[in-house]
Image (cartoon, rainbow, N blue to C red; front, side):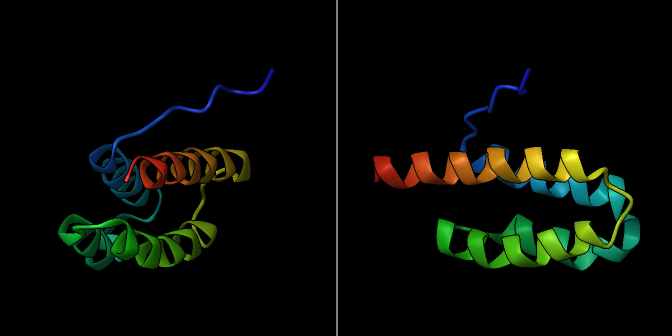
Length: 84
């Protein structure tokens, strides 16, 4: 059965992105992690998301885990946008 998608807050999206980077990319991702910490809005988040995906695709993350994490983030971004 498919893993249910979690609805995340803006802060939880940031945390999830940072955690996955530090877990799978290590020190290489430190500049991106710091950049993610500075994000203030969805526009900036989406810009960082492209770098985030690229970094993780080059890491040892299992493809299904990356896909699920990305799906959760995209789903949550959509919901946040609908509220605003």
